[in-house]
Length: 495
Ligand SMILES: Cc1cc2nc3c(=O)[nH]c(=O)nc-3n(C[C@H](O)[C@H](O)[C@H](O)COP(=O)(O)OP(=O)(O)OC[C@H]3O[C@@H](n4cnc5c(N)ncnc54)[C@H](O)[C@@H]3O)c2cc1C
Image 1: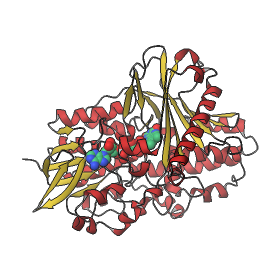
Image 2: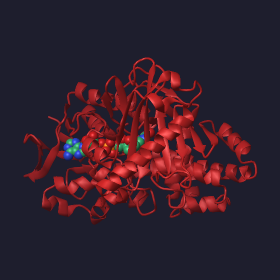
Image 3: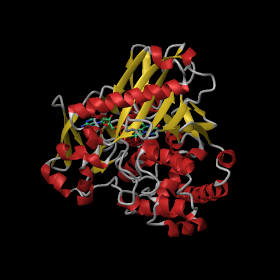
Image 4: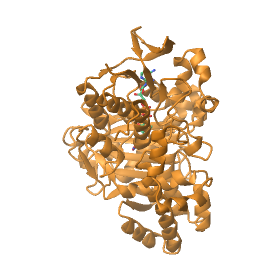
């Protein structure tokens, strides 16, 4: 009989680890505390509308992309359409289309910022060179630092003569490249890249670790996708794969305690059900681990991991969910918008909004004649502690979101068929992110690459995955960490 694996949490990371291990012949049980699968990439339904809770923009569905590889391996079919323009980036009253095609993207900069365009081009060319060299490494799922024979082999297989060109970039921030190309004063350019980096790396260019930043600025050019219905459908396909291959999935089942009895792990859920496993895979926030583990096991965790438990090391998010009449949406409105906020003109305190609209006639999201929109922004959790602050901030951001919606679709905000907001408390309650911290740790030098939390722990049979763990945030980062766990437990080069 295959070994027993308990996966705690059904985010992209836990689902990937669980589905892959089940296919490899392990006996996987996955418990999810919430009512929905998929965590931050899950969904909720109100009236006839379906809203993605957080993640909306798909990446990694192109040939060779991570989701594509995992899905092919598990024979999962996905319903995605490739976007020619990833999103429209709005800075003040200017609009910068983010084209996936590199030459079209550079031509856009030539037109928009003619005085700086040569330097902008050379910046992106350098960044893309770094990104592409790194991608060759990432395709082999490197673990940093490598420890097992398989991890060394994955690390070495990514090497090419180009790899040595990465050495001068080690230990630097993306800010050093912006400076090198003398672009600090080109406000449109710095706002543009900051919008992208905030969303994917949780930090701005001055502080972003260079390799991670280059990956973020390269990734959309490999393909960006609208996932019909939403990324939750990919999460649900992973659940189905796990079940079809004989695994067990249960929700809502909140795991409350994990401890060792002899050489087995004993896992207890909120209904006092007891489960036994050889391996436990935690897809929970780092800040939640202390409450789950027995004192002695917890003490064995690396100090570097414990240092990351402070929830205020992560950002929070404030999300707005809107149902909109289709007739109010201009025909040519892009599905994805990054709206940069000018703090002098907008008192909400938000620095940007990421606005994602459902495709016309995507009936997984809304009945015919309607669309749904998820709008998210980063918030500093320290400013949301008292009830007064919480209510005031929520009101300000919601008002500002409606004003931005009016700019994109005049009249749309006047008769919304449904609207709802979610602050840090909602993220804690419904997606179990402690204190509402989301999106993983900012990819600054202190948290990135070698400094990131690893999927393995010092406790035998205890594994970590998710966006708090290397390589970091986003459905792709989380999925990679799930692959790392599946490879380490099985000892096989899966996917
Ligand atoms: C607002 C927002 C927008 C985003 N937009 C995008 C985007 O457009 N594209 C993109 O790729 N990424 C996006 N992301 C990031 C992406 O959604 C996340 O990084 C990724 O989904 C996180 O996956 P995860 O595996 O870390 O798990 P999570 O999503 O955190 O899921 C963990 C699961 O574990 C469960 N759990 C926790 N504790 C327990 C317990 N004790 N017992 C049982 N279950 C438990 C939770 O309920 C949850 O379902 C966005 C994130 C946010 C917040």
